[in-house]
Image 1: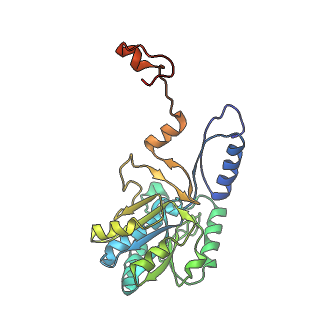
Image 2 (image 1 turned 90 degrees about the vertical axis):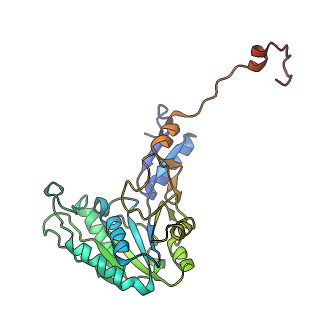
Image 3 (image 1 turned 90 degrees about the horizontal axis):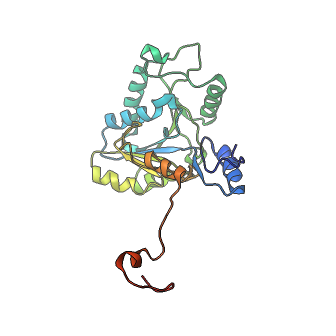
Length: 274
């Protein structure tokens, strides 16, 4: 499709391997390409964030779209002294989550198919560590209980899982928290939760990601027309309401030579400054 001469621009959303192939095909034809690829998104919990606020944000980001979204939670980065309190709150929320068919007014549905469920479950189990996954899920169907996994080396969680699984990493200083957040090649989205909004914004500005949300944990946390840039391995260019229209329509300049002279009555020769 990308090689067809009738195609003049390409927008692709998917995984990194597919994105690289699409980009290479577009490069051969010198076609502009817009790539929205994966993410391994951090949530930094500030020291002043209450455990309830932090747990709600973490569970929201972990379970939205059943964990199958590129902007979901990949790594939960917590102050070491409140880690246990936040995880207790999060476990309570996960335990209360009702799983089942979406039409039954449930809060968690199945994964897209059995192979993907097996893939996500295998990636979760390969992490080691302690798995916190108290949600009861139906025995039949492609359900997987959302999981927070503690005790995992940050160096082992640089890739995207693309499911309701996130690792937990304690920190003692905000510099350490930012280093943990930036410890991956992805740069799609970051999150910061805290009571002091100015302090949270200061930390958000240090996260290497195209979009960073402060105290927001839903798909619609920011304005509908906010652009969605992708940094690093997360893609190329900006997606967004206006940005995508501009990408496909291309800018064009149409003008008349010496238009100023024609309208002002000046008699200018070619090469004169208008």
